[in-house]
Length: 157
Image (cartoon, rainbow, N blue to C red; front, side, top):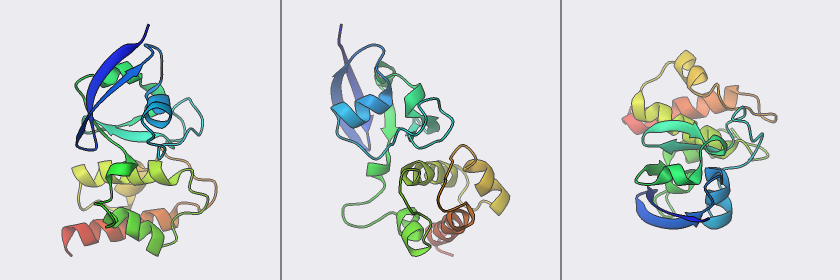
């Protein structure tokens, strides 16, 4: 039995139909064409599918699509303002903080969630805020530096 869900995704009202047991990750990718969130593990351990749900960072593989009713969701697709990249996206590029790209959307969303709550985090706070995301390619130093640079830019420092 399919369920109709009304929600807000990246500021836009969205209606979709899904199965009651369908993970949000599958809804985003297969029903809505929002393929930024990636399936890395399917168990909430890698952070590749991270999204911001009502201001809280969550793994979309662990949330059901039907739980989106009346909620506000932010995905990596909502970071850029048209052709203008979000400072986090630009700093990841400028700082070579990405390689294969599987983990990048999750890191970007985790960093955004952190900076939304704390616009001037210490290195330790950044590392803690990104701890739920795993990367096999770049290591973490370039990612942390990219978040630091974006935070500084966003503060206008």
